[in-house]
Every structure is written in structure tokens, then in C-alpha cells.
Image 1 (cartoon, rainbow, N blue to C red):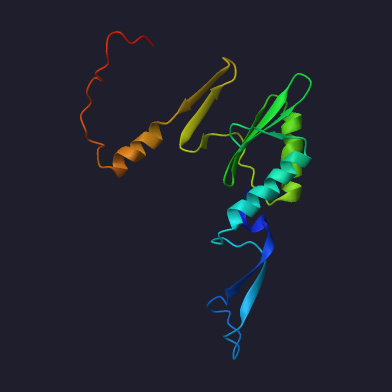
Image 2 (image 1 turned 90 degrees about the vertical axis):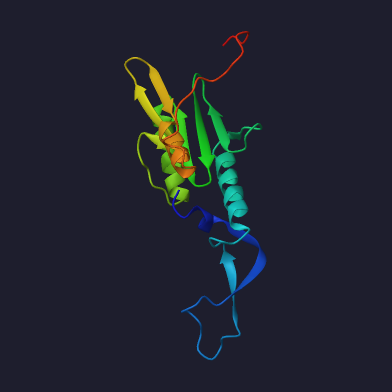
Length: 168
């Protein structure tokens, strides 16, 4: 989703100082009244989510009660799941025609960028072997990034001491 937070509609009156470089000469004491959300505005994430949630519900999706960023739409022998993380989406389903229809509806209502088949999301690398029916998720790059961040990339490995009574 491009410029997600700019899609939110404001319900209250909000004023801001004139942006630097755009001040009106001789009227520097005037302020701007906002009609739409801006990045950095405290209300922007909430207003964006409210607008997106309304769109999804109007499109026949049901929000998952356990995690409000998952939406599901059931068909006769099928379903589509949309996972939302701020302005990133992952759409999963077996019926490509329905997925394409959803992507078209989203594009008509929001400025979107389709990145194609998912290769990575939220630090996870996704690989598939459709002929074998295998989906593999790896967090190796994310773990390497954490090691680097905490300066432990050269640490020596050790066996994890677990009790012998534990069965996995």
C-alpha cells in the first residue's frame, strides 16, 4: 500500500503550523486546517486502519477476532486470507481469479503496488516448490541481522542444555 497513512479521513478539527518553506509572507501567525491525515500525525495510523477495515468488511471479508490484522473471506470450497502489517499485505488463497479480483478492488480504492509472488515478508524468506507442495519459511536473514545488531555474529555455538525427559 502506497502512502497508507494519507488515506485516513479526519473526524476532528486539527490545525498545524505552516510547513517550513511554505509560509505565507506577512501571515506567519496563520495555521493550516487539515482535512486529511499526514504522516507523523498521531491519528493517522488509527484513521487508516478504520478506513481499511470498513473497505474489507464492505468487500465481504470477516476480521479475525484473535488478530485484527487478518481478514478472511470464505467461498464454497475455498477462502482468501489477507494479512495486514501497517501498509504491507499478504494475500493467500487457492483461487487466483478471486485474488486478482480483490487486488483490483484494492487498487481502485487505494494506491497500491503489486510486488507479485511473495519472496519475503516481515523478515521471513518464503520459498515454494509447487510440484512437491512444499512451502518453506526461513528467518535466517533476520537472525543474522539480530546477531550483527548485538555484535554476536562471531559467537561460538554450543549445544542447548535441555532435559532428557523433554520429548519433541
